[in-house]
Length: 137
Image (cartoon, rainbow, N blue to C red):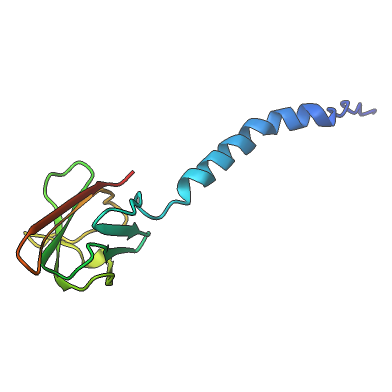
């Protein structure tokens, strides 16, 4: 009984086979590392979304009052609502995503819900309304 060995493929052909896989993994890693929504330095608010929390930063240049954060999930027109009440300039607040609730009491479920956009409505100390909306990729 004799076994014949198949000839080994040259190193270059093996590299060509794995090259598309390497490119796809590199693109996926580059796209997946962005944990924050697009940051505009002139925006009145900045958001950072991670797998477990949402961070809001007041960048309006002053204190805001009556602030309300609406987090809209993909496919639903009804938002999850968080009352920010009063925030000083440059104040940062972090909320665990599981604490977000809709007006009817529905909880934000990490394994089911994805965020499509966020909207903050507030007033500054003189009563001027501030509204900012940001879409999340």
